[in-house]
Length: 277
Image (tube, rainbow, N blue to C red):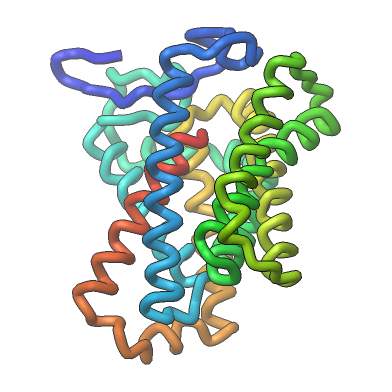
């Protein structure tokens, strides 16, 4: 999807490409790239979030999520403004690049409300789980997310998997517990929050699959709608909770190290969401 004038980034279009990617019958080259990108971004994002919340003692996980949304929406706006990306599947590039073309129809925005709600739950639960447990424990428990996702997809969409896929998932979970067993420390609250994060992640991924097929939006369009809906909600929530005042009074707010951690956290969150979608 490239021309001499417009270099477009790869999109997730269910109407085209490898059908095996959506049927789960084989690993495609695009699927491998997405998996590797997700792996790298997820690891780095956990480390940067952990550094902000624990090393610097930043008290407002919701504000980090808000910054990530603002950064993601700004990047999408700029790329769409420069006609690097589109928001809908099959959007014509010969049309004039007016300001109104940067937005999606109101009906489509309303259609993505369930996706935005599940995203908010997913991000808030994930942030709290990172704060509550150490990194080895978090990594080990989060490996069970795939199991939760398979269960949710089976309950919502009737999706069934082969014995080889189920066996692979069980092997991954078993290996994660073997790798982290010596670093695990039982914390009832921490365990509960991480498993809640796994459940919200599973719901979020299942919602992406359902909304993505029916809305006509591509990966960037779904991310854009997420930002438009969730950003104001989270801004209002952080304001009434007093998180914004706490952020302004945070002693390390103007520290170059803390600002670098926050910047890389926002960038990694953008690429992680792109990999997920």
